[in-house]
Length: 313
Picture 1: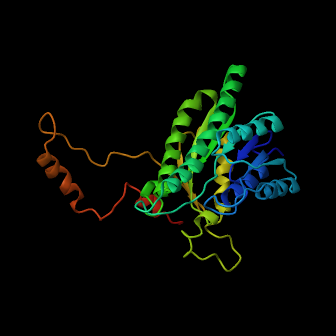
Picture 2 (picture 1 turned 60 degrees about the horizontal axis):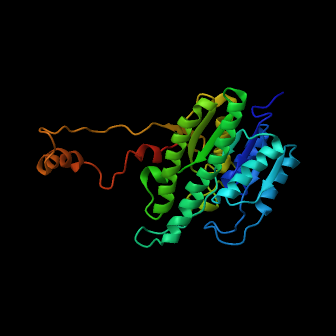
C-alpha cells in the first residue's frame, strides 16, 4: 500500500530534537526521504559547540525503521549553508519537494534590557533562517517548473508562535521574528502558487527544550499517557500539510496542540470611524476612539484571546 508521501523528499531544519525531530520522523513514516538538519548546539540560546550527533541520531532512527534519511550539520541562518542544505537534498534524492522550517533559538530579555546581539541573533536564526532555506527551495521549484512547462510539487511549512499574536513580555525578539515568519509565509504563498507550491505556517504549542520555562507549571501525565504538550501532537499536521491532500491549503496560519487544530483568519476591522470634515482633529479622535476602549479590559491585545484560550473539548 502506498503512503501519502511516497516518492517525495523533505528537509526539516532544527530536526535533532523536539518538534523538528517529531516532524522528521512523521514525514519519514508517511514515506518521505528526509534530510535531517540540525546545528546541534547544546544551548537553546545557540551557545556551545556545533555537533552532528543530534541530526545523525534522528537520521539513524529513520533508517532503522526502514526509511531513507541523511543528516546535515549546518546553520540555516548562514546563506551559503542554507544553499548547501537544499543542494544536498537535490543531489541525494534528485529533487526537493517539502521544506519544513523549524530551527530557532531563544535569548529572552525584557525590551529595556535586551542587547543588540540578543535581538540580532534571534531574528537571524528564526526569520533569516526561514528566508534562506525558502529562497533556495523556491529557486529550485521555479527552475523545475520552467523546465517542465507547468506546475511542480512543492510544500513549505514554516513555524511561528502564538507569541506573535499576543506578544510575550520577555521575548520581543522572538515575538517579532515569529510575526515576520507569518508575513514571509503569506508572501511566499502568493509568489509560488503559480508554480504549484504551497506555503503555510503553524503555531505549535509543545513541550520542548525551547519552551521548558513556558510550560514549567504544566505537569506531564503520570499514567503513561501522551502528554498534551508532546511534539507528537503537532507532527501529524505537518505531515498533512506536506501531502498532496493539502493541495488547496495555501497561505494559511494554523494553531496546533494537544489534539486541536485551529485555522486562524486574517485580522478583521473591529471598528471604523469617519471624520466629519476633510481630516480628523485631535478632539474628534478623542471623542470617537477613547469611548471605544473605555470599557475594554486593560492590556487587551490584538484579537488573540480566543486563540490563546483554546481548550480541547
